[in-house]
Amino acid sequence: MAKTAPTNKNILVIAGDPSGDLHAANLIKALQAKDPEISITSMGGVRMQEVSSHFIYNLVSVGAVGFAEPFKNFFLWFKLIKIVRRYLEEKRPACVIAVDFYGFNHQVLGLAAHRKIPAFYYISPQVWASRPGRAAKLAKLTREMFVIFPFEADIYKKVKGNATFVGHPLLDLMPEPAAKDFPPADGEWKIGILPGSRKTEISRHLPLFLKAFYRIKEVHPKARAYLFAVPEFPDDRIVPELEAVEKYWSKDIEIVREKDYKLRSQMDFAFTCSGTATLENALLGVPMAVAYKMQKLTYAIAKRVAKVQYISLVNILLKKPAVKELIQEAATVDGLAQEAFSYINNPPRMQAARKELIGLRTMLGERGAAERAAARILAHLS
Image (tube, rainbow, N blue to C red; front, side, top):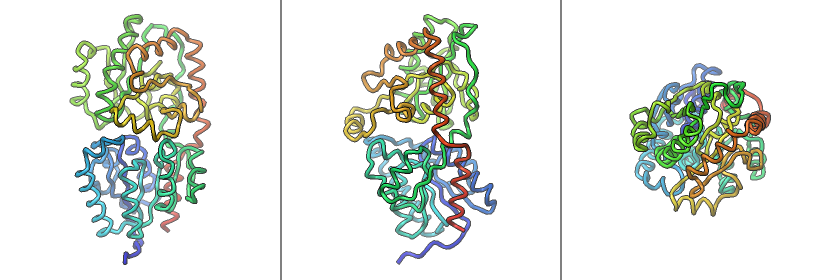
């Protein structure tokens, strides 16, 4: 018979993608600020590693997403699950905190439940987008879920889950949108390039985005592109992708890594892979074209299980096609460039779009999501 978890100051936190790594790191810092005696063991990415007492493995670097891709990492997954199981049995942490990343984390939650170790979910997976049946499973495995979109709390409550809307953590990271004039006085349009945070996403989207940028540059010679990269992909992994596009790697493109979003907020327009980046752009008031290409098998399955009309968080929240989505075959250089020009050649539309996107801030609650979640977790454990 499994033992009950003892009262201690050790917490296990697990995240599996770059955005989860970022928000998990801020939650860890909030927990440590409220109780300096807490010891955090984590499995995630470089940001979590920087703030944790102990770090098990860089799960973010694996980058397995979709339906087919995780099978490629089956043996690694199996090994990591064994490591987590052994850790739970030997260290018996006070609780487990899962951050997004359903595929791996729901298995971890099952291990914790079997050992009667309390579990929490910070930033629940977007089960409402594809497989809502998973909401009931997560509700049973967690003591409390901390959700970041207002409508998510109702989804979990319908399946008898304990869910609390704590606000969106991006609100604590976003600077105020930069004031901008269109067209820019110097003619130097700033174009953001956000191809994704995983190798497969970068390989599929970067060539398209760069070629679309050069369509803009043919008309506006002073235009510059800013490629926003995540820490998991240093320059020696990004540059070969750029060079593979031959002439499209030049002084016109600057690789950017930043934590404060200040340069991103200065972008006039962005070519963006679907994901958290779309919401980041919106909160900064950056109009965009959203593209996503995936393996044919993955796309075929995704179409069958999808329960939402849109793929970008912006359109899902606004319940309309506020930003153009170009998926699979529709994600072409012509389509991307055409959408960019529809804004660049129409300054009133650009300003109207900025206003609508910035308005999303009012839908996402108040600042302090990590602090509120940390306070509730510690209250459960006291």
